[in-house]
Image 1 (cartoon, one colour):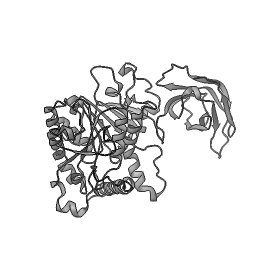
Image 2: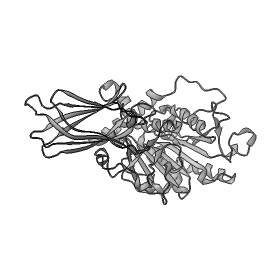
Image 3: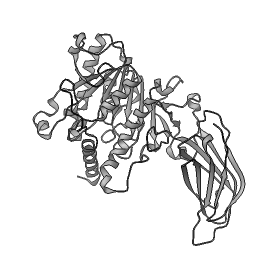
Image 4: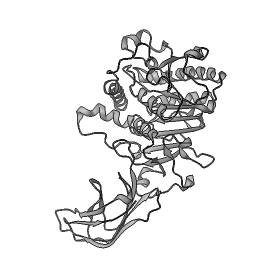
Length: 456
């Protein structure tokens, strides 16, 4: 076995251990009359494994704290079922769980969905198929899709429309939903894929993975494309948070937190999505060909979407109003490390006089007790520098801009003459003008600052 494959298996084991140890819901004990997602052990898996049927759990506003087992017979016993065919249906599909532990986040997501909208929430319990050997899970995931499609066929006979189904899936569950969409020829209403799985899917045919043809609208949120998430666009719109790789606030400094680090990036898509459902702020994606171009300030508008930037959250089609809806559109945005994760995108443009030696300057935007810093390495052949910063508050709340010449200690760096430094917010809701300061010098080791009096 090659080093690459051993690395993948090790990472998958760490991830699965993290799901079990870090998010297993051991504190809550189920009411005897309430349904729970399964747990399984290695011994049970060896005896029964994938022979177990996929199970479905139903949650509605009428039984938000006590899930009900749901199957084809439940609809014929309408007096015993909370399912309402007149309501939209959200279908939650969990991902891989090598140790067979139930994912505790399912209840939290279901309750969040029900607070936002009066819907049916169907939870797909496929723990018996999704556990232990990852390669076998990938071989068998389509069986789960087939069983889900059987239930949807029955619900159609009772009056449900395909467009009323919205699949919300994490990791490997995204490809389960994708194949359900394939079986229904893309007539499913919507699929929201939360960091769709990458291992064993990156080079496969679209028939075997999620793609835009699987639903009327497919959106994906990418947060771990360098390990467990897929790095290619798989939806109509694909939101790449912080470039889709390393998420802010996910620790990398201590080996003891390695499992938390591995889990953190991959799970961030879920928690950002749940936060967005509450609607406390907008998480808007900016179309751009690459993350590098985005950070360089080369993409600052949403003209491709008639000026209305796509958003993560409950809006229909991510708020897109153009027709036809584009496919595999890469969208980039920066986030903070804590809920609600929203950050304001600030474009900083710095123009200086030509330098005789390379230099480094630190620029800070300050607001009350919050500060955003950026180090800029300057070269003798460049005089204009553009960069995008994530700031926790709007441009109009910035109190001051500070700069410090932090050049090398081994030679005397002359003053840096700044022709202008300008900060602007994008996408701009209030159409503010950039805030600028012109013609000043920044001496080495001496902090320069300029205060603003702005009103939102």
